[in-house]
Length: 244
Image 1 (tube, one colour):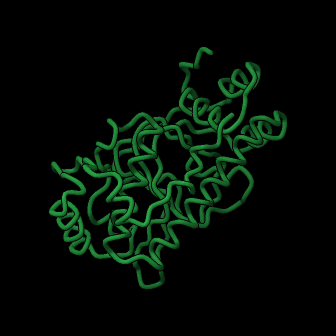
Image 2: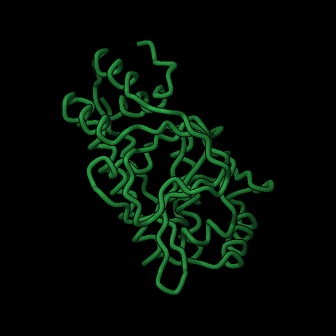
């Protein structure tokens, strides 16, 4: 099989881990109308309450979804990386119910929502693959609710480090269990419901226990078995075993 070198190459590889795509499906994805847009670090792609007319596929960089409480506190809901649609629900829902912000300089393919909707309805294999992708997003959301709601601080951070390692490996963004964190400790804290000081303390504890090593933002997991145990981590919710 020859993979596409288009803007949608990463997406096609990702979707083909979910379901079989025919050559005509790949060509249809490559032919999606789109524009390439660059976002500086910290920029918003979508804000809560917007009525977006497009969906964004990350080509480079990292982003997060988040919501703000009435008193101004932020809860990060998910992290996203290259090859992922970060606001696929905008193809069917009329109004954004959360914000999407990039951590790093980011390039995205901006696809008109009607084109994506028509493609998914007109080509069942693509529709199935996007549906599965959305269901896996929902599975990750459920795990994050458990992580913030029921695990202690050490387990929360360890669990997130495990998730990032496997997802970055799947996206070819990690060297085994060694990867660079694209987010600050403040952003990590907003993802696990802790303060930045508390997150820093937990990272130091995990390093002292020999589970990880840190070099600035580079994380290396030294003992996968022990950190999985520390984080109460079971990768089943990532559904990386869903094969074509």
